[in-house]
Amino acid sequence: MTEYRIDDLARAAGTTVRNVRGYQDRGLIPRPIRRGRIAIYTDQHLQRLRVIGDLLKRGFTMAHISDFLSGVQRGDDLMEVLGLKGLLTEPIARTPTEQVSRDKLFSYLGDPEPGLLQQIQDFGLVEPAGDDEPPTSYLIKDTETLDAYRELLTIGVPLTYILGLQRQLDDDLQQAASTLITAGRRAVTEGRFDGWIPERGAEEDWAASFIRQLRRTGRVTAHNTLNRALDRELTRQLDDYLAIAKFRRTSEDPPPAPTP
Image (tube, rainbow, N blue to C red):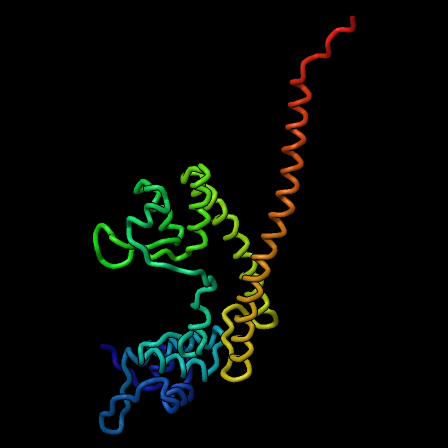
């Protein structure tokens, strides 16, 4: 293990002796080992100084860094320290759920093949409940969607077709989600910088309020925008379908009988 005196440590970390002493007084780096009147620092101190320097370059304040390092020592992470993690990681979707037996789930889905059931799990619609292998029960994470599946199956739409539609919707709506969240990220960084972390107090309150409103706005506008788009597209394609039907019927009409 390499040992440093304070001036050597500061030089290796790309900072000043004054900064090292200041960080030490703030509790950001451990106290040195004392050998008589000489303070001895180690690689642990150097590594911590480099972390502090990197965070400062990224725009973090000393208050942020102090909270961050204290939190890390407790096993927390930065978002937990700043009080935003719960808000950011709370699921936006709030769909009704239900735990059902394997037999009941399979009756919903018309006894699906294993590959099709795996696709439904990959979409996040169901997951095995418990540790049984094979599973004896499942958690339906979105009963509304599974009910819609069941209604389509009842009128003869194949499950493979339904899952293909689900896959296409997932891809298309992922793009819409990316558009909205990216716009929100730009709004946060406008006049600041990417990676900006709010100060405790008014800035943190604003950030929390912004995230809540972004989640609500995204949920409401996406739902209602999709409904309007469905209405427009249904009208467009229905008109197109009827026009084709009219053309086919006209072209298939028998020729008029000859005049006697």
